[in-house]
Image 1 (cartoon, rainbow, N blue to C red):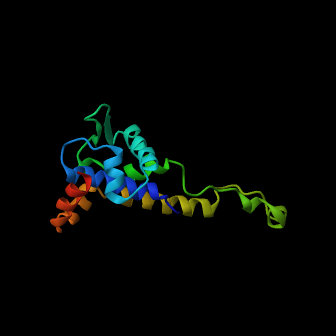
Image 2 (image 1 turned 120 degrees about the vertical axis):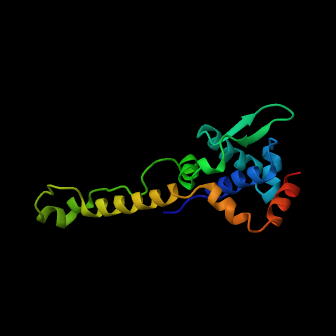
Image 3 (image 1 turned 90 degrees about the horizontal axis):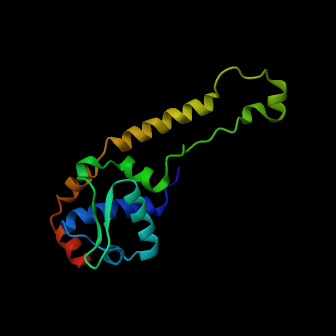
Length: 155
């Protein structure tokens, strides 16, 4: 499975908002901090708002702030907010097609390939839900200069 750039952008933006402090930051500030196109980043930010991970405030002092602490935001939350909740694998029941399908008895149980892929995806989702952004922030905090750089970059 391949995730779009939006997931990476969303993860960094959430972490940057945390490191920058409590003030709301606008799309332009956040986009400039990483050299991203503001209109596309804004799309990701709006998806994070809809998912309840960010709060958007209008006005001259408006912008985006975290809706909850990093301890309550998992990697899975961000992936689902940006990519959606569709399964990564879609079984097309090709086992029933072509010559093999013609020559084989009609299947009575679930497709073994589909079952294996769903188990793997479930494990992937569990791994993502076991990691919070606070876990990543703790790793970033091992490099104290990062917080200063982020604050300077968004000013």
